[in-house]
Amino acid sequence: MHSPFLLSRLAGVPALNRAWRKAKATWKRSFQWPLHAVRKSRLHKYGLTSRSPLPVARLHLRDGCACRSLAVFVRPSWDAVRPLARMRAGAPVAQALTQTAAVIDLNAFPDFMAWRKQVSKLTQGKYHRSANKARRLGYVSRFIGAKSYERSLYELTGSKPRRSKGILVWASLIAPRPDLVDTRKPMVWPSCPRHWRLTWGAFHVDESGGERLAAFAKLMRSGDLVRVESFIGHGAALTDGVTKMLMFDIMEWLLERDHPCAEGVRYFIHGSIEEGGIGLFDWKRYLGFVPMLLDVADALQQLRLFD
Ligand SMILES: [Zn+2]
Image (tube, rainbow, N blue to C red; front, side, top):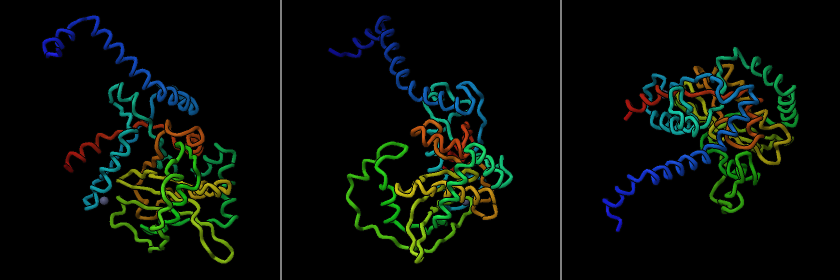
């Protein structure tokens, strides 16, 4: 019988204890190894090793703001960065299991041109030329109103069965959602410039002035952090350079810092260096995203205050 007495006797058997510890360690190693291996090879591309000290991004998600939309931004931002938060003083196990945020510290660039120069250097001008090609082909970008172009956003997401983060199964399996339609709601700027969610669309404009959404980026700001929630280009428009153009336009907006919603942003996070295939990783690296540790102590305290 499995009496508590018998279990406690079994737990006291050294050989069983050893076997249990060994099984646990093996499981942990096999679980950690792939992430660790990916991290090692990708850090190597930055000229770093697993032991290199990484710069620390100290996030201020609340940023001293008393706006009422806090619950909608601080908590989701915290939830999103937590799996990327290889913390400065974190336990070794937590550091091995969490990913490494891919971050651009905007303070490192006095203006957009300084950033563009770096990207051109890293890509031998390839990204710059690609973005220019998209403009020549008639692509333009702008912020779009909330709940606008829902049909296009949906179709765009499913326009390529395989993406850098894996196969989008739902794209081929889910019904065509006839309920979604393209509307053009006016762009309304958020009430708090330091806490917002904005969607940026890249359109192809034909000779008669007709527009077709070809790429979009969903961005979320909480305090000094702007995070890429999703960034998707139409499968058929990728070779036109539309995603490069869109990223260049976003960076110009962030680094020119003349819009209230872009003022005071310091960290721009685009997932982690470990996620996705090598194509996604190289895209981030060429754009200047670097591995950084996140110091979220401040955010934690803010959330406690918030509860
Ligand atoms: Zn606010």
